[in-house]
Image 1 (cartoon, rainbow, N blue to C red):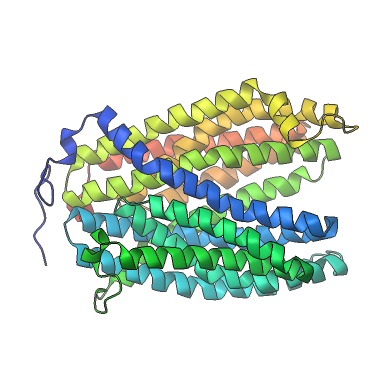
Image 2 (tube, rainbow, N blue to C red):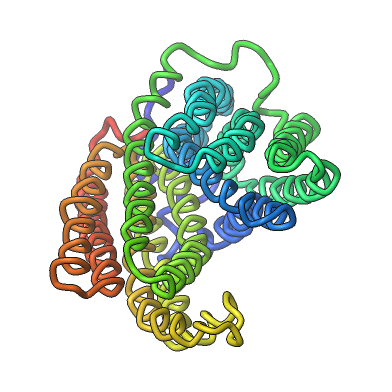
Length: 463
C-alpha cells in the first residue's frame, strides 16, 4: 500500500496543480472539455440518424422510434451515471501515480458495463408489454417491439463505450472518444441505408452497428497507442480486490440521480401533452434547444470531475477548490451565453424547427418565444448544478448530490410546476417555471456543498 502524498505536492514530478491560477485551471478544464462536448453531440447523433431513417419509413415508424429511443436512452442515462465512477477512480489513481490501479478500475468498469447491460436489455425487450398495459394502440406496440427487439443489441457496446470514454477522459485523452463517436454515427447511417428494407428492425440493427463500431474503434486505439501501453489494459491481473465494490459504491447513487432527472424531464413532457398541439410543439422546440445546449455543461462536468479527482488523488486541496470553481465559472459563461441566445433569438430559433408557412406556425412561435426566455435561466441553473455535481463526484461524494437532486427535482420542481401549470392555469409557462425552480435549488445546494466539502476535505477523500 503506497503512502499518501503530502498535501500540495504532486504524486509524481512536476509542479503541483495548486501552482495554477484560477484562470489557468479554467483553460486546462476547457481544453479537456471541448472534445468531450463534441463527442456528446456525436452521441446525440445516434438518435438523430435513427429518427431520420424512421422518417423515411413513415410517421407510424417515427412514433415507434420516439417510444423506443425514450426507453433506450433512459437506460443509457442510468448506466452513464453508474459508470461515471470509472472516471473518478481512474483519475484518482492517476493522481497517485499508479497506472496499474487505474487500469484495474478501467477493466472493472468494462465488466460493470456488461453487467448493467443485462437488466437494461431485459427492460428494452419487456417494454412493449408495459406499453400494452397502459393502453397504447396494439399496432404501435407491435412496431415499437420490433424496433426494441434489435435496438436492445446496442446496449452492450454502448455501455462499454461509456466506460471507455470515462477512462480516456481521466487519462486526459478524450479526443479518441470523440473520433470514434463520429465514426460510429457514420457507420449507423451507412448500415441504416442498407437495412432500410427491413423497416424499424433494420434501424435498430443500424444503431447497434454504430455502437459496435465505436467500441471496436476505441479498443483498436487502446491496443495500438504507445503512450497507453503503460496501463496494460489488455493484461490479466490488473484489477485488484475491492475495485468493483468501489465503482458500485460511488456509482449507484449517481445512477439514481441521473435516472431521477431523466424521469423528471420525461414526466414534464407527458404533462405538456395535456395542452394544445401548438403548445406541445413549442414544448418540443424548447426541450430540443436546451438538450443541445446542455452538452456544454456535460463536457465541463466530465472535465471538472476527472480533474478534481486527479487533484484529490495528489492530495492537492488548493487545486481541488480552484478546479471546481473554475468549472462552475466556465459553466456560467458558457451556459449564460447560450441562454442569452435563447432569450434574444426565440422566434428565430423556433423557425429552425418549423416551417413558418405551416398554418399554425405563428401560434407555435408565440408559445415558444417566452419558453425560450425561461430556458435562458434554465441553462444557467442546469449548467451550474451539473458541473457542481461533477466536482462532488470527483471527491467521491455521490450520495449527498443524489438526495439533493431527488428533493430539488420532485418535491420542488415537479410539484411547483404542476401547481403553476394546472392549479394557477399558467400552462406551459408554469410547467417550465417549476423546472427552472427545481434546477435553481439543485444548483445552489450543490454549489454550497462543494464549497463546504472542498474546504474541509477529510483525509479519507484523498487518493
